Amino acid sequence: MLRRAAATAVVLAGALAPAAHADGGGGVCEGAGMDVTVCASDDTTAPGSPGAEGTGTKPARAGGKKPTPPPCTYTKLTPQPPKNNLGWEGHTAKDGAVYQVNCPDSGRVGVTFVPNGTAGPAAPTIDPELVARRAVDSMRLVGPKVASPRAAGRYVVGMPMWMWVTRSTSSYGPASAKATAGGVTVTAAAHVSTIRWDMGDGTTVTCNGPGTPYTPDQGKTLSPDCGHRYVRSAADQPDGRYKGTATATWTVTWTAPALNDGGEFTETRQTAFTAAVGEVQVLN
Image (cartoon, rainbow, N blue to C red):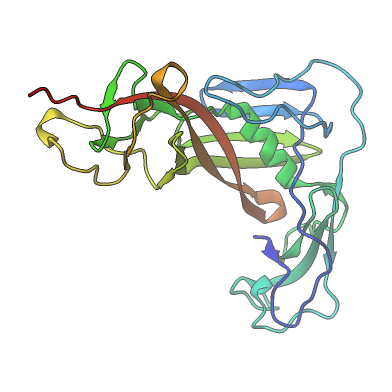
């Protein structure tokens, strides 16, 4: 697996810039569901940015010129790093060698171990992380499916609000896909790691899971894992509602077995919600 440039006695130059997306021609090859092989071209035009629930990325275009793929260079280190270097991944010189990996297009710089008997990936090749991002595009990930707060609900100042989402493959995961471009095949897996709730009243709540659905027997108890308490009514808000957003952070892990490479990155998807919050009027 790729090791970032922080290993002992090996200093690799290069900034870790955000990786670009790989978008382009081709289409979806044979396969169904979320385990799909995408015939991605080597076009590096950025797809549409993540949006609200139901907003997918741009569909692949048919035809068109395929430009030269953005290269990654795998260079065998000479001399080889010390045996305590992370690039060895627990192996020794008897097992193989450590290569420097440099992907200028995405800014990935690091080292990876290549076993003996494997055709060393010394020649330039397309950046596998870009192929992984193309695989993520095929998953059609969307924003959280907000179950609570409900648009038709009525909430009270000072009362605990339970927030939760409905889980599905495209809105919460796990989802997986494969993509091939420039002779490189990458498998990517994605799942929601956190959901950040902007409640519309100036506060935010970050939840590490989908939240727990509320049931009447819970009474006035607080949510065990994802809740909020409004301290003022939404009377001064448009339509008497707080307007909030639920932003899911998707963690994506990917592997390119033929290159003995792999990594991780995150993407976000967002969904808007509203909450009508009022005060209880007590009559004497």
